[in-house]
Length: 152
Ligand SMILES: Cc1cc2nc3c(=O)[nH]c(=O)nc-3n(C[C@H](O)[C@H](O)[C@H](O)COP(=O)(O)O)c2cc1C
Image (tube, rainbow, N blue to C red; front, side, top):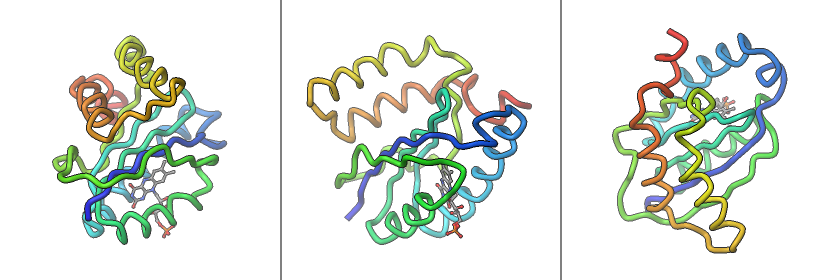
């Protein structure tokens, strides 16, 4: 069964405190992720927003659990909190191999969808995987927020 997982976490020092460390850290994470996720048949994207990570992962249960075990003991972030973990019938990010997007580059992009998303949680109406995927897919259409293109 394919599953969709989304978590948020807090970026730790030194990445959180120094932009050069942040850039280097993201380069390292993306490099590792792109290699390992291919083996684990995991797709998704990683968003960075104001000192937080938001990661969307799609894959089969066993592979997701293997990866989440690694991710949750990674000292580069803390307070890993899984917001969604649910079965899906098909991948929404099948063509994405853990590219990183930095939302701070264009804050106006995230406001409308992010607020709707937050309001859902506040009202205790959990959005489903498809809604979240659609929101994120709209965001990542903007090339300016793609990490790597920004720092290049
Ligand atoms: C926010 C964040 C996201 C990450 N995403 C992935 C990922 O999608 N795939 C991956 O293989 N490693 C990812 N990593 C790196 C893993 O935490 C871990 O270092 C790596 O998979 C090696 O696993 P190991 O430490 O168990 O050997 C991520 C790390 C962080 C901090």
